[in-house]
Figure 1 (cartoon, rainbow, N blue to C red):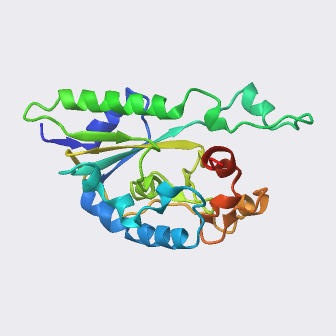
Figure 2 (figure 1 turned 90 degrees about the vertical axis):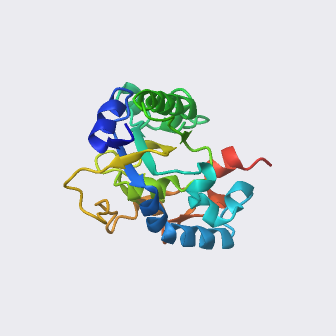
Figure 3 (figure 1 turned 120 degrees about the vertical axis):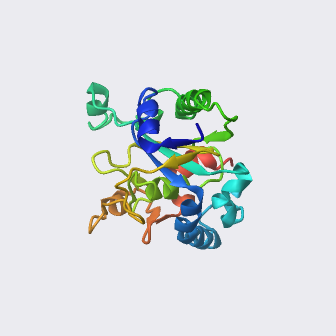
Length: 239
């Protein structure tokens, strides 16, 4: 079997808890990420990366898919929700006693890098076992390499990029973790797919993320100045 249909992949992925996915042929990914590369260059030139040297690499490398996997044919993009709806989530909305702080929801459970990557690797193994003609070549990523993950997810119709610079999935908001499989497998789109279709949705006139950011790190034009961001200061800034 040298080609999968998207319906086949969706059915198998659901067995591993990967229910939100989209697939991009590599040529389409290159074409649709060209503007994102330009925006990344502009962001780098403005110094918004702070001390994150890995974000200062040549912007074109963030969409150089052959660099990660020679012979790549397609990219499967996945979004996994971490939106907790229980008493713990309800408690997170209440005022805190003096001296206490909040922990971001994505960090309430096990390390998502390991959890999501384990699922993706299992999916690849399953698909590989169905390849009788040849050995499937692939690489699996989740927030671990210089890859334009959000732009890929957007182009794979998993959502739109909001003013907070995050992927927003209507109905889930930005409470999703992203992962990708790069492989030399062709995925046939559904027969009713419209060529050049783009994900629907937008922030419209809403600016709550900008006005509520405590350090004014979210800028106009869907950019973040990492030097002001609390996440950068507590995780990325080694000094």
